[in-house]
Length: 109
Image 1 (cartoon, rainbow, N blue to C red):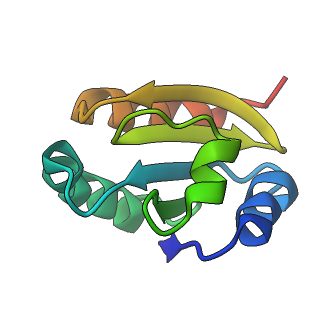
Image 2 (image 1 turned 90 degrees about the vertical axis):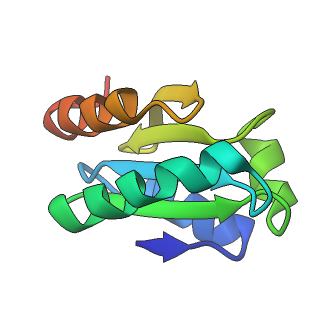
Image 3 (image 1 turned 45 degrees about the vertical axis):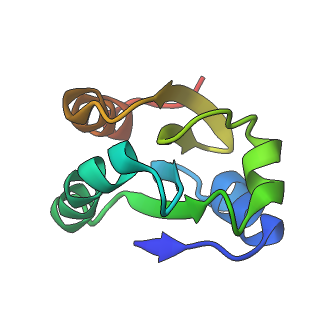
């Protein structure tokens, strides 16, 4: 699991990941729902070593959050082959888990 520091790093992960699923967690330290779902995100990263899990602190990386049009936290974005496959907001563990399972199998179209 990685934490991003620059927009360039984000774009590299997103655009050059090829067939590897990239799951981005946009969070804020002060956000209660973000804290609640973090253990699930960390556990998924341990279980799915073939998926790239990234955390973006929206207060520290405002440029990345703006690029992705993040309006609330937590927001999760799924990318493959440089294409956005899914975005959802909220601390729904089942949506996060099912998204990882579904999109790591699918080809981006």
